[in-house]
Image (cartoon, rainbow, N blue to C red; front, side, top):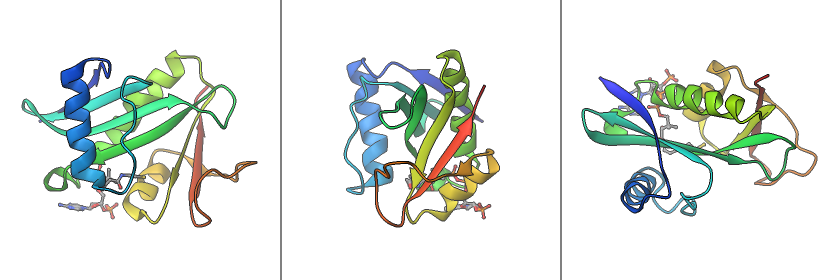
Length: 142
Ligand SMILES: CC(C)(COP(=O)(O)OP(=O)(O)OC[C@H]1O[C@@H](n2cnc3c(N)ncnc32)[C@H](O)[C@@H]1OP(=O)(O)O)[C@@H](O)C(=O)NCCC(=O)NCCS
């Protein structure tokens, strides 16, 4: 029913689709990423894009990927698409030779629960990069 596909964020149409999904899931809650940077996936229901996720090289942890965004349109939530997107980007991180995936959540129980389900652990970065109440997640993938 749902298919996850890695997409080329350099492609103008793809970047537009990702930007639409970002707007519809994050509203004004986070700045629009540069989709030409890193690796991006789209979840499709039939041919319709309903979710997305991206990973970029981490600027905070050595030899690591930063899971930068995940969003699923509300009417398609509850089908564990975040987990499926996470599996796809972990595979890519492993292929890139990265040692770990790091990420963060702020006031987001559904997403934090998915990090737990996917085997991530909480950690305290040497230099925390977000808010005082942000949770930082990591998973070693080698
Ligand atoms: C976080 C997010 C990607 C998770 O989406 P998802 O993959 O559909 O999530 P899940 O399938 O794991 O479902 C999450 C919870 O919502 C519940 N749920 C079920 N149907 C739902 C619906 N129609 N609407 C909302 N939640 C629903 C699920 O039961 C689940 O609860 P549980 O963990 O107690 O079982 C999604 O909520 C989202 O896009 N949020 C906005 C953007 C965002 O916050 N991104 C993450 C930033 S860290």
